[in-house]
Image (cartoon, rainbow, N blue to C red; front, side, top):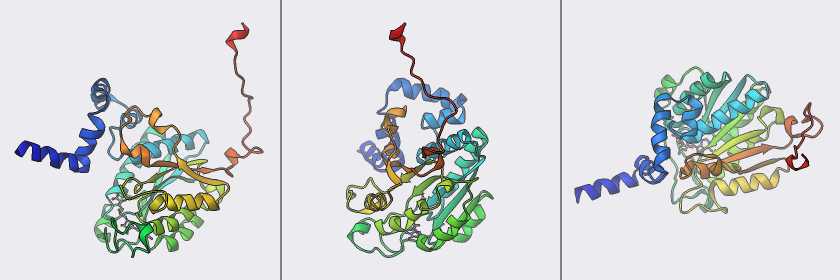
Amino acid sequence: MLKSYALRRALTDGKYRKIFVERLTEPLHLNILSAGVALFGSYPAKVAFDLVVRQQYAYPILFAAQAAKKLGLQRIAVLEFGVATGAGLLNMCELAARTEAATGVLIDVVGFDTGSGMPPAVDHRDLPEYFQEGDYPMDFEALRRALPARCRLILGDVAETIPGYLASVRPDAPIGFVSVDVDYYSSTVRTLPVLDGAAEQYLPIVPVYLDDVGMDGCNPWNGELLAVAEFNAGHPLRKIAPFNLLRSKRIFKNAQWIDRMYAAHIHDHPARTPATAKRAQQAYIRNEYLG
Ligand SMILES: C[S@@+](CC[C@H](N)C(=O)[O-])C[C@H]1O[C@@H](n2cnc3c(N)ncnc32)[C@H](O)[C@@H]1O
């Protein structure tokens, strides 16, 4: 009785669900291999094996840093929208430091929040059955003291703070990753203009993590997914879509974060524009049937 209660508690708690439902349902040989990677693996190997806490930040930050390196960039910015008490933001700072050490690309972290919790919900599209005004307050002083030098916390409604931030983003330190965790449809609508800047203010592909697309009550007509659909409809050259083939590229396929990972495609980025995207060498397909 006690045992089944403990198991039930464990399975309902997010952390244990990750272990029982996501991880232990993966092939045994991969879980055994993980132990070796956990002990002796490099940081990218640990990210590949989902051994880093908050894989939904670890993977896209590493992806962005590696992409930046290929483009010859030395610095990027990674953003968290919706900070609350700052667990995610502090985790992002730690992952930024580890990614920096692994890739040599410098990473600035910027968090955005009202500082006073959720604003009022506008209508049913904000999923009021899950979120309400005043949820997730912040202890600003405690968080400020804990933030490392690489991190900036910008307080206020995102509709008011994004324009000023965007004006400060330089092409030599473009935005490389955006986490959207502002819960409401209306707040996501106000967040996505962070992707409205000049093309050079972004990497050509910016991973976008949508935290709140997985509840039973979510669908394409409410919450973050509706905000993304409206963004796509209004932006011919900027499209947010599920991250291509991510599940098949991952070693562990059951992790939920995979389904929350999207990418913003900056189609007007110089690296994706015919006149400026030219490679020095032409592509060639070798044909082994020609002898
Ligand atoms: C679920 S919490 C974020 C949790 C955090 N990402 C973490 O991992 O610990 C959602 C946050 O979004 C913030 N938020 C919602 N709408 C906002 C808006 N329009 N402008 C700024 N912040 C907003 C709220 O203040 C709240 O703290």
